[in-house]
Structure formats: structure tokens, C-alpha cells
Image 1 (tube, rainbow, N blue to C red):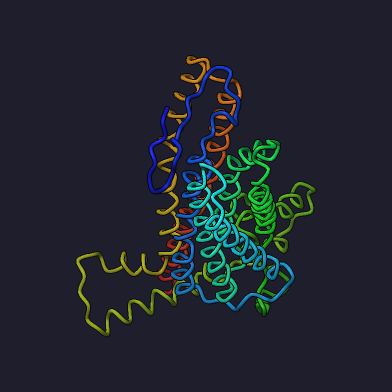
Image 2: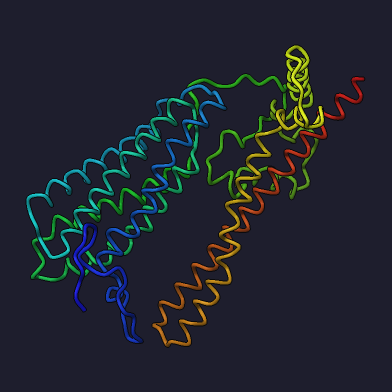
Length: 365
């Protein structure tokens, strides 16, 4: 099979899979170094845009310059330096027939590291204690490095390719940095100043100070659930309600919207109470809508994975391939259920906010 040279790859994207194929025999340089690397790059490109919009909605104090923040900033910069070094090296040393793939991979890694570094600087300036998108970027980057690591492992033990030792070491450092950052982003940073507690003896809601991973799987709620399991749970143990969800805050917000509409004499075809209510509770509504859209591909891909499993067994593909498909299907199923839970929580939050503000207005009258 001849390889068609093009701008991105000199090798085919897919290699044929036989019954006795090993994992390394089914991974092409184009797939390992170019194709899978584009997904984390695309998400890393979106992340600073999202954080820019987010910072215009939520205003918080800057992050404190802790050791965790410094390490989180240093490692992406180191990743960028290694990517740039690999990029320069490949410009002066065409080490193999797959140099086109390696060259493009170094460029993709360089762009990725620049985007995630910019994103984390935005988190530091805008007081984002934990960015879920940034965490997912590094997780996807770690997954995208696995096929390339398998190829470099085979090259490392090939005496004829020993001149590629620089590439092996660089890729191993990429893999190590990605693992460290996936672990580090599981811990939330903290603000440079502390919020004043106006709730008396009640504990502040830990959700706002938890990491994105903790909020996604509700890990921050474990102490409260464990306390209830031991039977020592009282009303004083319940977290203080976030100010943005109190009836007083929401009522003042909707009164302000109504006064502004009355002063400007704006006319709308939408019922007069409906649109102000949406404006006062739009954040959880928008979050619920976004999660409902994200869930749709995961709903449609479930039957597709089941078909892949059946086809893999019918075609007598290697056992490792069928097992990999089953594992991916199970992980995506768990992830989809977490997305469903988040969508339900945001929908319930929007409903409770709307109910709270309506009850406040009714009893106030």
C-alpha cells in the first residue's frame, strides 16, 4: 500500500486490522501524531474564548499566588518550551519518513500549550478557582498522547532508530507533564481575598470553592452525606444558601428589571412577567440548555458503540480491540449519566429560583 503524501501526513490515517494484529501494528503515524491531537487543540482554542465571556458575567477577586498556582502555570510553559524545541529540532533534522507527522505534531503541541497557558492566566486574573474546560483539555491531551507513546516505545528498543532518542525523551516528558496537570487540576485554587461570611454560624456552600471535577461528581457533598449517615445531622449543618439564590436578591433583581421597563416604556409581545423572570434566572436556564445539547451526541453514540462491538466480534478482530470498545462505551455511559444529573440540577435550580421570586412578589403584595 503506497502512502499518498500531503500537507499533513505521509502515512495513511488507518491501518488494516487482522485477527493477530497487535496494538502497535494498528496505529499509524498520521493517526497517532496528527489526527488525535486535533481534538484537544480545538477545545484548547475554545477555552480562552469561553473564559473571556465567563469573566464578563461573574466578577471575582484574583487567585492567590500559591505553590499550586505557580506549578500549574509553570508546567504548561515547560510544555510549550519542549514543543518549540522539538519544532526547531525537526526543522534541522529529518530523522525518518514520518518527519512530516512529527513536524505537524510539534506544531500542534506548541499551539495547544500556548492556548492552555493563556487560559490559565485568564483563570488567575478572573478568579476562576477551577476551569472544567481546562481540565478536560489536559485529559484529552493525555489520551491523545497514548498512541504516540506506543509508537515511540517501539522505536526506543529499535537499534536502527536510536537517533530518535530525543523524540522519545521529549514525548515521555509530554506524557509526564500531562499526567501531572490532570492530577493538579483536580484540586481547586483559592482567591487572594476571602469572602465575608454573613450567615453567622452556618457553613458556606463549598461548591464555589471546589474543583470542577468535584462539582461534576458532587464530591464536595461527601462530608455532609457522611454526617447525615452517622445520624448527627441538624438544621445548623445545612450549608448557607448562596446569595444569588436567595428570594430577596432575586426579587430585587426582578423589581429592577420591571422598573427599568416601566421608565423606558418598552413594549413587548411576551407576557410582562415572563421575560423579566427569565432575565432574573437566566444563568441556570442557560446552563441547563447547554448540558441538554451536550448530552445529545452521547445519546446517539450509544447504539453506535454497541454496533461496533458486534462487528468487532463478527469480524474476529483482536480481543484487545473489542475490550477497548466496551470500556469506552461504559466510560461514555457513566459520563452521560453525570451530564444528565448536572442538567437536572440546573433545571431544578432555575425552577426553585423562579418559584422563590414569584412567592416573594405574591406575599409582598
